[in-house]
Length: 124
Image 1 (cartoon, rainbow, N blue to C red):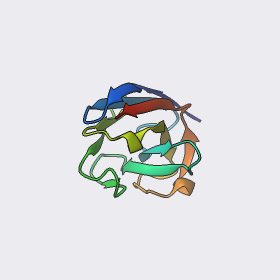
Image 2: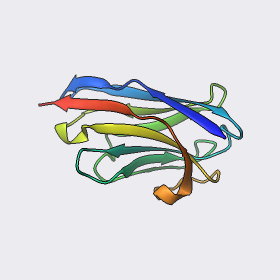
Image 3: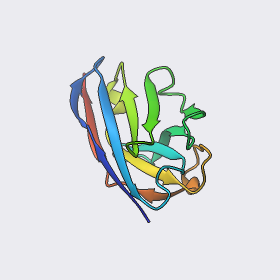
Image 4: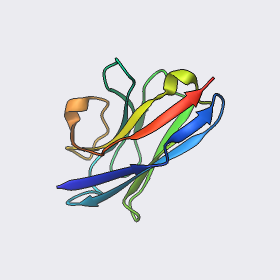
């Protein structure tokens, strides 16, 4: 089992920044890939960023490429999502997920464990 707890969400104006954190604990928490997903009201959950177990490989969705940065600190069992130049369309509940393997993937079926989510609201 892997437990994931997100933090850092909140309300920010368009153009601002937020940094989300996800603290992981449990079995193999530092050797899985990690991903950040989001779900806006009325929309399906989508992966916005993924990182391999050692941080060497990262992937981003097109809408966030160049604005968001995923990183991890395995010594602290924590993964981060730095979000810059935020837009109102980034408003969503953001979820951290732990992958089934060490390799980064943008596919939801590649993840077994999920956090409870943190709300990010970007005002115009």
